[in-house]
Amino acid sequence: MRRTLIAIAAACLTVPVSALVAQGDAPQFALGQPDPALVKAGSYATDPHHTLVGWRVNHLGFNDYFGIFGDVTGTLDLDPANLSAAKVDVTIPVASVTTASAGLTEHLLRAGKDGGKPDFFGPSPAPARFVSTMVTPTGPMTAQIVGDLTLNGVTAPVAINATFTGAGPAPMSNKETVGFEGRALLKRSTFGIDMAIPLVSDEVELDITAAFEKQ
Image (cartoon, rainbow, N blue to C red; front, side, top):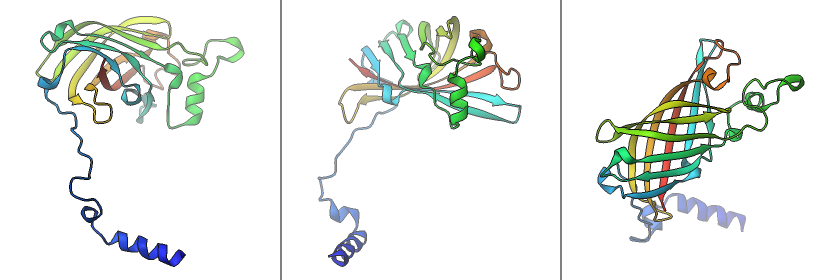
């Protein structure tokens, strides 16, 4: 029996995929397209499984280190005929921070020593929140989004340079979806996170990728 199964598997490996799947049986998906004409006006909510905020800092002047915040939730009100009126309101769960080092992740979220201030976020950090205050189109596919970022109990303005990356119905849910990428720079000391400056850079680069589904 085992030899029979091996023979069948070996035969399958020699058959082209096109012969294993009958013509027309393969699922056909319409992918999102970088076409602003496909964007529908309305209220959107993040797809939290595919919306991420990456952060990047310099370490000791030698190289950069990155981490990610996931499970980002929020809303986007968007009318392609009036982009300046767009509104973005997203919440970023700081407690879900992910890095490549378990020790560093623990350091970011551990309590301060002897009841003192934590080095970074602490064990129960409040979520961060970004609320837009102004959207300025800068090109056919780009805009600058200025808003208030609340992080570590401090609120300060942050500007995001955003690029439209795709729109259309999502293949699985069939919901109208729009995608964006964004870049922003901030100083962590502005938000009271000043441990190890300048050994670890004060300047933090944010790399944002977001998908919003029409409600």
